[in-house]
Structure formats: structure tokens, C-alpha cells
Amino acid sequence: MEQWIISIMDNYGYFGIFLLMLLENVFPPVPSEVVLTAGGFMTSTTSLTVWGVILTATAGSVAGAVMLYGLGLLLDVERVEQIIDKHGHWLRLKKADLYKADRWFDRFGVFAVFIGRLIPLVRSLISIPAGMSNMKFVLFLAFTTAGTLIWNTVLVYIGRAVGENREEILAQLDIYSNIVYALLFAGAIVGLWLFKKRRSAGR
Image 1 (spheres, one colour):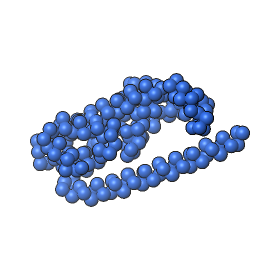
Image 2: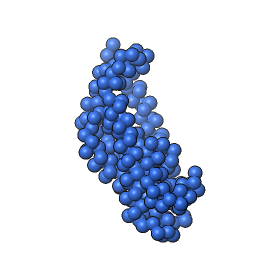
Image 3: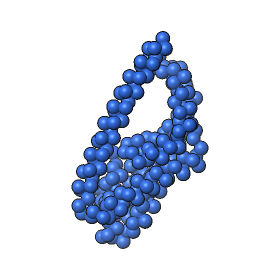
Image 4: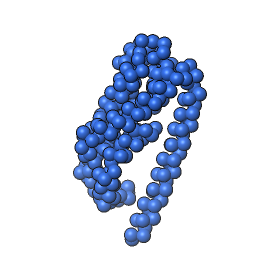
């Protein structure tokens, strides 16, 4: 996939970077780590500039995030309520659980969006609950852009600094991603266990 990504950037320049980063948000298997470090390296071998790559990549990422935010708006609380009414008995969900999650996101959502943009996998998916909770679009856009800009800037500068040796950096980032995935999985298991325990105690 890396060669395909580099060929798109080589052939289409900034537009290719914008498109790849948009896809990375709506289709996470396109790795932003590869796009950004390769873009950083190409600033030393092509006419691409560091801030041109950063800003174009950020625009593509934010565009993809806005699309997922829109998807979240379509899956608003009322629609999820209908799903719970219809399937809640076997999903083991109640409307109270939905309202609790919605209140949590209303309270901490902007920080969840900002931090989420710095975490692999989560950085794409965090836009959906933001839309579902009807977070103010201006706040969503501001915190998404801020988190995305930090992530993109760091990786582009890393790519430029290490040049052709970026494979070592990508290997380290891959380890970081795998650790994050493992923690997210473990957190989901613990959360599910606590949820079931609380439900059993409630009965």
C-alpha cells in the first residue's frame, strides 16, 4: 500500500495528499502515518513544502471528519431510541443507558474530540458520536482541526527529518498503534463487564 500512496502523492501532489487524508478518515485502513511521513520526506525531494503538506493534509482530514460528523447527525439520539425500542431486549440496552452516554459526551465531548484526533483508529471514529450528541459544529470543527493539526505537523516533520529511514519510525508507530488497539480492546471488555455487573446489581 505504501507504494500506491507514494505514487498518488507523486502524481497528484497536494490534491493527492488531500484525497488520501480524506480517505484515511472515512476508511481507516489507509494509514495517515504512511501518508504524512512520506509527504514529509517528499518535501526534501520534490517541490512540495512542509507547510503545504501539513495544511493540505489537515484540510483533507477535517473534510473526512465532517463527513462522519454528518453521519452521526443522521444517527441522532431519537433514531437510536427507535432502535432500542425495537431491538433493545436482545441488545441488552435501555434508553437510560443512551441518555447517560449522551450526557457524558455533552459534558466532555470537546476534549474527547481533541484527544481522539491524536489516537489511531479513534481519530476517525470520534466524529460519529460528536454528531450523534449534536455537538455544536463550530466547537467540533475547532477541536478537530486543532488535534488534527498537531498530529499532522509532528508526523510531517518526522518524515522530513528521517528521510529514507522512515521505515524505522513507521515500525515504532505501528507498535504504538498496536498498543493503543490492545488498550482499547481491554477497555471495552472491562467496560462491558462493569456494565453487566451494574445491570445485575440493579435487578
